[in-house]
Amino acid sequence: MDAPAVALSAVLGLLAGWFVVVPVVERIPEPSPLAPQAQFTVVVLNGALWATDANRFSRWWAVVVYFVVFSTLLAVSVVDLRLFRIPDRIVFPALGATIVLVAAASFVLAPTNSIAFDAIKFALVGMATYFAVLFVFHVAYPRGMGFGDVKLALLMGFSLGWISPSNSDAMYLVFVALFLGCLFGIVFGLAMRLVKGKGGAFPFGPALAAACFYVIIDAQRFLAT
Image (cartoon, rainbow, N blue to C red):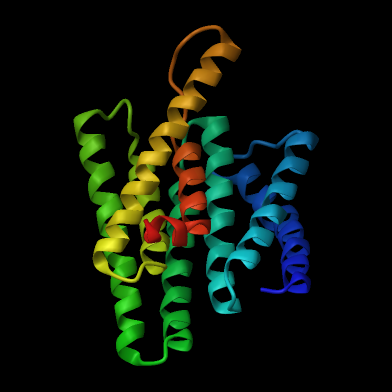
């Protein structure tokens, strides 16, 4: 989108960060106020995410879909960092809203109903793939992969699949995001170990969320390889 649209999205993102994202992470899953510096960081990050979204996509219907996705990824990352939990009360409402928005956007943006149905199908393939892979990881090593991450995979896979041109590409983007998420998680875990001076558990959700965001923003480069 053009520069004014990106700037408008940034402003809207700041407002949504203050009036929606911050209250959500302070109340769900339990009341837990953020420090002023943390509130400021969340607001600025949400504005940056929305601006990046508008810069990535050329149609408002797609931009609005990823407003919801990116703000949700930010919210669950903040909660996971603080409480080591990914709340259903954030993930499932966001997933429901995203499914509705994607269904509507697909028929508005696609030139034919057949193409619109294909776009929704690819989103569902991405959702099923990401959920299935993380579910296997969870069953194999539940201490390393919490079920909150598995449920978040539904939203991440759906949002990755929707921008894919085929079933195989939907699965490919999911595996790219998962691979990068593991790399980000390793780096994050090492950083926490250096800061704290000891090992221990660390939340994996933020790494998966960051990787999902990165792959969505740069999907064309991954699909071109």
